[in-house]
Length: 88
Length: 105
Image 1 (cartoon, rainbow over the protein chains, first blue to last red):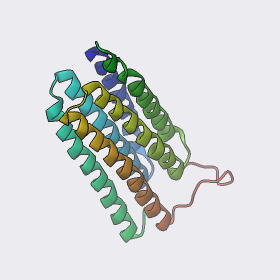
Image 2 (spheres, chains in turn orange, yellow):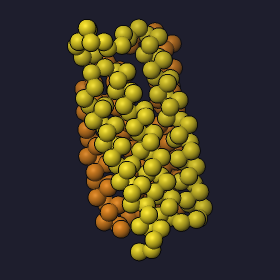
Image 3 (cartoon, one colour):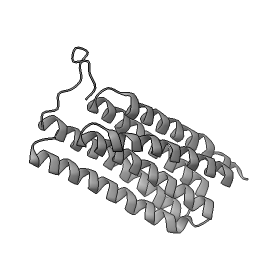
Image 4 (cartoon, rainbow over the protein chains, first blue to last red):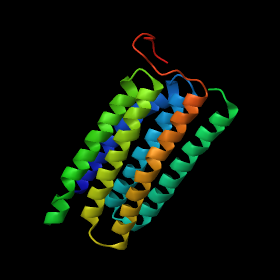
């Protein structure tokens, strides 16, 4: 079962690399924000899988919760800033 | 390996499938709004399926209750952030892609 979690984590890491292309070269600020938000969502699941691989879930679940909160607040802040500034 | 540990495998594979679909949409769609459409819905469902599968694997402990709490929070937070950023794009004057305009933005 640990091997299954490991392969799932490797697959999610590959998807993170593909999302990083959109976060790096995406035309405009908004595409970059969308890519970074997708990366944060995948990282949350990868952290929980790491917890199950290392048998330390009760520690990694708190890190994952904080990561979800930070991802949400960061995206909301960026959207608010861009809306107030009035240009993209 | 007991039966409830086997039962998490379809949830995790379904979540991984929706992650793949959302990433393909993020890479291949022609416009910012189309990309946000793909990642907003796909990632929400994928995170929900993955976290439900992991909490089934864990069993009934405080950790699985925390994992369910993360799932509920992401189910509320992901559409909210998607809506906020698409409203910011709309108000700052980004035109949606149509078949006539034709080029990537």
